[in-house]
Image (cartoon, rainbow over all chains, first blue to last red):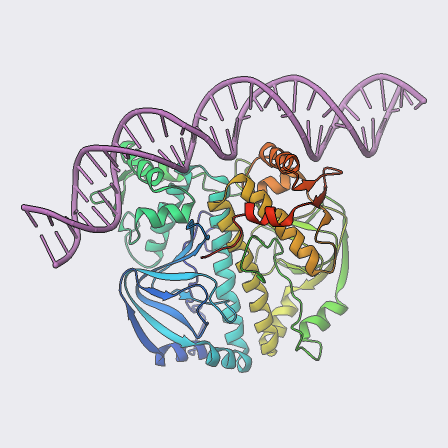
Length: 234
Length: 234
DNA sequence: CGTCTATTTGAGATGCGTCAACCGTTGTGG
DNA sequence: CCACAACGGTTGACGCATCTCAAATAGACG
């Protein structure tokens, strides 16, 4: 959402606006909600599950994806600490949410959430904003998968991750990717091999380093940004 | 949204639930709002425009798209009668909305809408649902552009249009596409030529007829559905 | 140490993009 | 009324970016 650019893999960042003084009903509800731990590869929920809860990621990371009947998979987003998942599903979940590392989640019963939303207009508006942010992120990803080349997609992905890291007060230049090459491939609409080759190519160009396969160091940010075809619009 | 399938090109269908008795604040507001007419190719709004209004399509059709600095374009959705456009943009519009045929629009000042949303919890919740629907549609499109072949994309597109037509009480088997091949191509992440060739191929297979380039007759629905790779999930 | 999974790398195939020509329709002006 | 330009659509030939298939390597774990 923030930048007019690239892909924003965080489905819902429900940070309260800085102007917020008193805790909202949602935050109160979150604070007293129950906690759940899931291991890597464990499902938070699956397509078709009744939508009894929505969740906020406390620690860890979750992949959100849809699958076609023949097994092809599209990852539509990754959820990181602070992000809400499961919003906007009426009755049944319409996708799968699978932890990609050990994860702690706050659980919110949707029934009580709906009830609260009916009473507190601020909460309804907050939900609206949260989903609107997620929509903006999904559209950016759509632009990426629909129009960009393999290199541009991978670079956009790395830059988006870097920005997210920076926003949450961490290092924009060095980070560990929690997801596998397969997750990245299914997110960007590429194959594992193409993602791997692209990483190798970027390393060969001296733009990044890969101390381990999941660790990325950005060596030349400016040139990466140039490669992203990043700046939308004229 | 409705079907768990294919792509749903309508950004926001703000139909009230059947259970709704009294007109909501939003509907009242819509009824008394001002009307605007735009010609084909005219902009409803452009990226960067201040978000002073959101719009509901009364008649006609609108293409919603983002463009990269080098001109590549991604159509993220088409808006048809009943659909709301411009939701979820804080301050400035983040995409372009361009009429693809002569169109009538209801205009809603966002200021008064936000004000209403603060008072009426039902309105906030309605906005939330509207954006959630749009999000679901965008995710389906993402699945299509990210994972499906050219033929599957075009067939998904035709089937989605057919379903929409049927839902609005029109013919599911024969319809006129309001958009150009270029619009379809930029929507599906293909080129004009590939879209055209795919139409020709489907005609050659006897699955559709094309009396004019913009008129489609579905001859063999079952086989088209089989071609779509349509049914998501196992 | 051996197994299993993730990743990398290579070689070859192909689906779609690119470039270019052509066609049909529409609108315009001489 | 016709010539012509402009535009959208179709078709063909060719190239290439990415996919597919396959094998080697590297970690992770028991």
